[in-house]
Image (tube, rainbow, N blue to C red; front, side):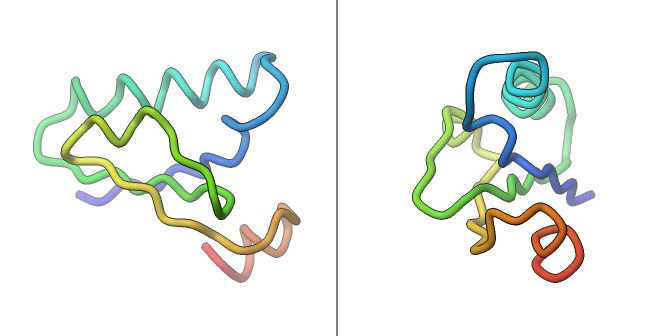
Length: 73
């Protein structure tokens, strides 16, 4: 199964959403067998998730959440 995560919230001031998304993206692939994870992140960002072989980052262009969710994802 391919699972997409909107990873833009992981790149900001450390608060609830940032911590949640970062920990979810880092730990979920390690407990799930056979799934592929695609993290949709702002262009030019790299997260520590790339250490996991079944996860990759796909860069989206728009920082606008409505355009990103409706058009790009």
